[in-house]
Length: 305
Image (cartoon, rainbow, N blue to C red; front, top):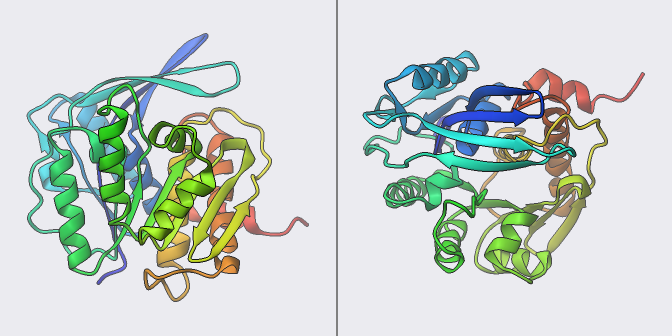
């Protein structure tokens, strides 16, 4: 295995609607994770769908500027997808989408150390079958699998089918991270501890749930840790979960001696969770999904003075 990551899922144009302006920039949860990994010095490829159009050119240039390599199969005949995020006064975002997920086959996965997927690429037909096939083949070849459902209720199948798709991918993954909103949609009325237990008992080595301003929970084996939030002035929350995920993947899989895909001790969970929380705090402190580079994350960890 090499030291790189393969990310599978949607890339699109985000339109962020604020009271006095509209901003357009590339986005999509898997594309953001790919961007975040590459900015953290992980060699990263993205298998996605973009059109041979100006929006597709914008995505390709933006990701390429941070070192993300798009697979040649990512360019399709369909127009580039688009999402509209409307920001509330507190900086939280609601979304509307115009998109398709019908990726081309990826016969050669290369030799990634990690394969990540999530969001619409994991749930939306007709391409979700291809996503699951890539995960199956990658795991069989020895890649570590990471998954973030990042559910969009207005676009995915009904909750029951979404739960089935979620469990199929989550329980095929070594690392599964979701948000408290994901947990409530997929398992309404259930506690976060219930969801973590479900994942760990199902064979996931490390499971996490982000809780916005309340921080995050991480679990592995019999261990549970609470990751406190990093205090910052919030510009908006766009990309916060993706930044947490990218930093968590890097810290767990690509730092130090790496990871064998088995259970992790609580002190290690605390360490990697703190790095992920710092990355998320940097992202929410500035507009849009502007994920940190490694030097920023390292500087954020340095003691004051």
